[in-house]
Image 1: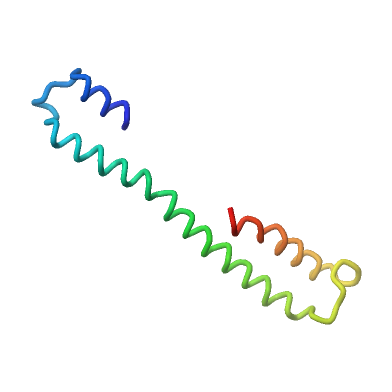
Image 2 (image 1 turned 180 degrees about the vertical axis):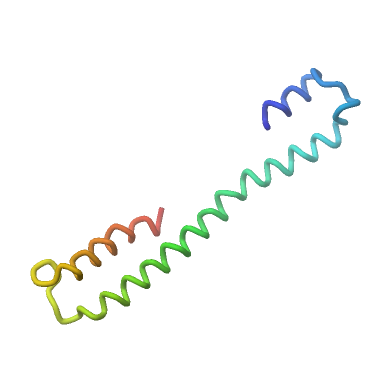
Amino acid sequence: MDNLFWVISVGMVSDKVFSRKKWKKYKDIFSLVRNWFPLFRSIILYRLTSKKLEKIDKELSVYDNQVIGTTCFEATELMRKYINLKPTLYD
């Protein structure tokens, strides 16, 4: 998109095809979408990851009195998933 706007601003495309006011409006809208998209993506990923962590936390509550890593394979795998997901929550 930026290349198209550059071509228009240089004058390679006539004003009959794109008026300057119209393409500046499109450029502003495109820039706004491009800047807001990562924010919305981050919010969605944060919510999905936090829901996964809550689910794993509920599953781990069953194994409260057990030592993880020695006796129960399921609890060890759940804890491994929890540890791997936790840093991605803050990326």
